[in-house]
Length: 625
Image (tube, rainbow, N blue to C red; front, side, top):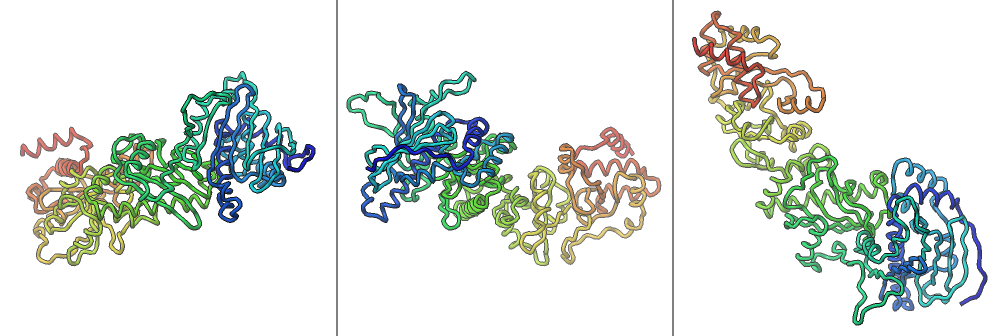
């Protein structure tokens, strides 16, 4: 090894300001320093393995990678060492002598913004995770020896704007980072000395670095081992998502699902995905067999766990999975994202969008396969998560039709159907998909608006979920076939010659419709005779784009403005009540009849009668005549 004196260097950026901001303003969780050091150690071993493939002389050095975390209570220091690639003199200057290599001004500005916004995850973005060591240490030293070299070097700094370099002795290649911990503080926060506890260190390793590919050994310096006691790594190294499905048993997948979700019921579906190309990532996803309690809570625990190169980053990462797939649980491990990437950066990162797009496509493809190959399980899925999935028809226009093909929708013929089956079974001359929204399916199935369709044996979709009214009006069509609400006034029921029941000409000329409209005044937009009613006396339909009464109530309860309601009262000219009204001529009590018929129409739509007492009086009066 070459001999030399100690060199003193200045950092290539305003280190004092950077470290002050980082230590006191940005990192709210000091445990992250250990994650950063272990990640660096793992990368160093990876690099040595790659070099070993290129250089046979290094191949033996790269065989057994390991990371050691040693707490020395007597010296009050903590070290993290690896047997990886190591660093040369020039690499130490390049890697550890330059803070904020992306630009000092940009880094300081971002750090100050983080301090004001509470964002604690910027360090990895600028490649300075190593300097998080100064959160708990007042002095840091690095001893390292480059693989294939006889020279070893010691780097040291107190974070005061300078660092030293000097030759040292070191067996084998690799790097050892030693943190000389700060004195105990009186501010009530966690003390740096807490990191001298092997129990605490193992907990941090388990949380953040459990799936690192190399064993991480945690020990206390000077601790005596019992006879026959074997060294046990603190991490499991079982990153199932990096292995092919054939290498992993169902029991292992099941155990991992329970580990991630704490759900002891087996999932409905498992999705293993490896993406290569412009954005490389692994994903191991699950669709649970029961809904989480917070499925419809805005602040619920939605999203997947994010790992970067097998290092845990965050729980509930919503940025990688669309909101309408929030029931999906599991892990995504990216090879490309930076450690400590913040949620704000994830929202803006192009690679995040690529991951999200790939995961969405994979989940929808898996649901499509389940629907085709395991229909009974898919029905169970739809019962639990169908209403959530339909939100995607509105929010994800790119995949809207794919989601519509996954829908199981209630039918006026009983049971459920798909949009594809509906279209393929349409009557000759039928040009539209007919639907009815506005309430529970049980109530919709008894709606008077269905009567003419049932008489013609024309299928109508009964859409009873709150989201249905939104998506069907957003989509407008399925392929080339448009959606048409049977609640609209100008309804074009396709012609079926000889089946339409025409009202008596005498009723059409009686003039009672105009008098009834006059009596109702502003309560309705219009009154007219109907061809859609068969058994019921009256129903409400709507002018323009239909908005169901239930949706109006919902918008109003949320403080939203709702367009003025334009209800049209349609009467069945063949019903005995309507014929009785027409037969009374000018002697009819049109006010009472109007109250009665609008009340019956409201009840048939599942609404409450606005003026219940008036309705009762009208009913008593007309029944008594």
